[in-house]
Length: 436
Image 1: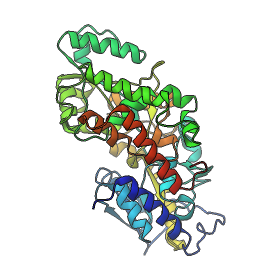
Image 2: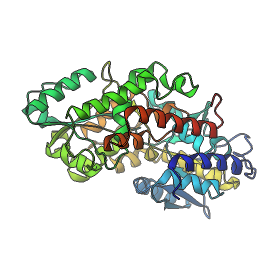
Image 3: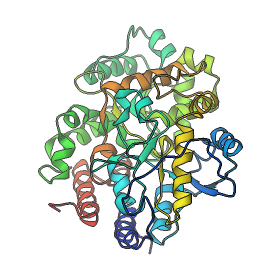
Image 4: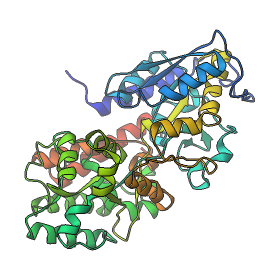
């Protein structure tokens, strides 16, 4: 029998807690003072292992090559097959650890790795003062301790739109709030244009529509209340967002093939103008970049954040945005892992962002030429964005799977809410959260 993802996650949490207690001592493991070597200090004879997902295994290529040349260290990047997060948790639970790994730097996912037992604290890291102030503490923290190094701009849930479709149909400006966006959507539908495109078959993006509706509530403490069991996923604010998503689908504001459409279909539809808008995150734009050059994207694709009250984004850092360093019990390798991070975010950072054509997180390092305008707009929205479920909740239930089941017609909105709450409570109990 195949065990549900939530049950596997709960078991992994328990196993991680148990194995973490037996880590051998080291400078970082014992909680003693952590030192940071010069980023280019010699590391001849040292080999480090970095775990990465299939969509992040090429991210560090340039900076690792530069680090190896500067220090003499050897760095091996090992790809963990998808589903990446489950694979990493299973390996760590059995005592198999890398020196570093790409990891979603949110509180719930740091909890999933039992950060206190298994990860090196990165407080006092030498690059922190160089980060743009609004981004320094946006993620990577758990219970006041920093466990993750943010290396690229965190993903934001918002609306990617086709500029040419807007212009051809008399939409003069991007909507200023959710109601305005729905008014535009209905005007487009009346003209025969598909307003929104959703990827129901691939499932994972279905949750963005609910989460952007919750942006204002998140800013007002929704996830704190859910974390303490004072509200649930069946509370009106969340259930109403689920119901509204279903109602908009029933109204015909989405693609007719919503149940069978894929992530690739979504990118093709927006780029071609078959659909006007898609609620998505940064990885969606990465797919668009694989389909068109920057000049084409700048002319066709724009981005705006959205919430009920205005243009408020919902940030959701993913595993390609950050790295964690593990407590391995080998003090020399642990120090070398910290040194790689210090090099990456220090003397190697300008070369890294130039190679990746990505937005710089540091005030003194300008973003390179060639970063698409939509990505600059995404990054600009971060300063006023609020945290997603993944960023602010103590656990990450299968909301997207349940919503995909709703789209497929096998769950009602009420069932989505109650099932998600049951999963959340199970994960919270496994993590030892008080009140569950």
